[in-house]
Image 1 (spheres, rainbow over the protein chains, first blue to last red):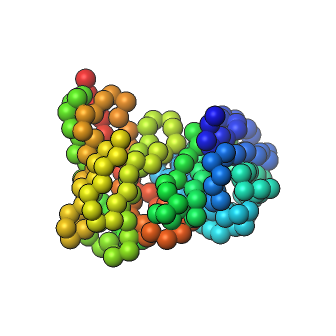
Image 2: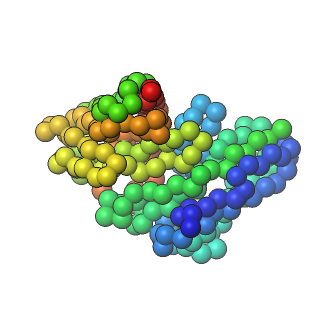
Length: 116
Length: 111
């Protein structure tokens, strides 16, 4: 069983479209995250959710709307896609907000989004 | 969070030990050193973490200097599958709700 699974793995879409990426974790973690890795390979936090509540929104444009229907799922919806949104998006999860007592983060395998 | 400095790249021969350095001279007393790695086209993977004592697990060893201003991740017998970008991250031990990644070190293990 994959611990943190994202779908789809690849997504190619035109500018202006709306798309969603889904993430599910089966680790029983209470905190989930979305990270973006751009073409320069920098990994940046976008959002953190703890028990379905938004904890961190790292100045992400409001075209990006995360939704957490339950603790095991954190989906990312993107409206009006732009060329600059092309990147690899990683979902992750942890216990207790990533505290040392909660252990490390577990990342999914990523969704490569290409906007044309 | 304290900043970290890592060399951009390193090479290692297969079967030899890989020693990856990290400087974190502004680390504060409650901050831990974490190591993650990212193999090409995969998500980052947790390796190990420590506060002030040396730590070892099935993947690696972490050596932290007494003044805690630097650390070394040791892969005792590097294999080709260990080729990856290795990230040294300093984070408090509490709930931060984020990991801040730097540029990391690209370790290339050569046959």
